[in-house]
Length: 293
Image (cartoon, rainbow, N blue to C red; front, side, top):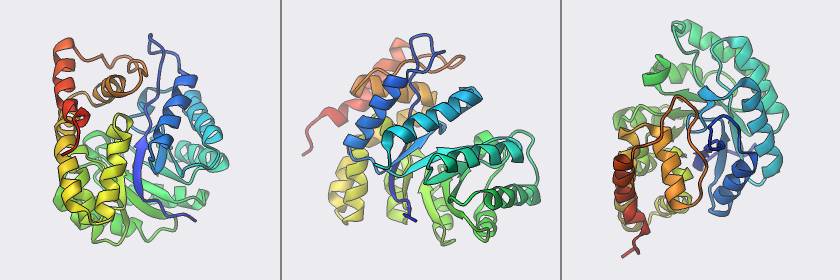
């Protein structure tokens, strides 16, 4: 089984102008752009894919369309979170059945269980599927924090191999790396530093808007070309700080539109950025359009 490493893009889900209809042609075209740019891993229905706003049948459709289109060109992680155990198992089984390389799963969110309940949830999930499981830690949204101590316990479960950590805490990243698990950074402004700390890669929404620079950053660090990596990161950082401090999905989709292709708005109730904020985004993206020194 191929181990996951590198830049993993949680692919944006394109919609038509109303935001209510999936743009399937735009989705596959966007996937092609990621592959052509060298992105290592494709993730469907992640946070940047607006999974929380997709209808259940839409989530399955996106997984299926992209899996069929990729046809093994890249490892594919499918995000299959659900609040209750059986729904999470059903989604994960569906993903395994259509060729997922791994599934990413949040702990049960919204008035979720205690630690024993979280462990039971992942044990049940791991017993039901054979594909590797990436735990998704974003406590600001899930309400549950997968601490290094808890992740160490989860690593004892067969199939639990990875964690995406979106706390934005470098101490936490280093503590997770020390567990011996395979760690993916999920906080945009820490992408460079997470790689230096030993992360296998990043699950990074901004890759939608800047796939080639993201891949170059990973390659520079892996080849110990740290001067080149630092210079590239300086050009990337303004946009990463922008994304982290604004409505994330709206900002990323706007950035994709500025840098490559229009992929439609976010689904309601997420609103498009104002003209004033769009101007700030354009300024933050500008260094990536300048020639490298």
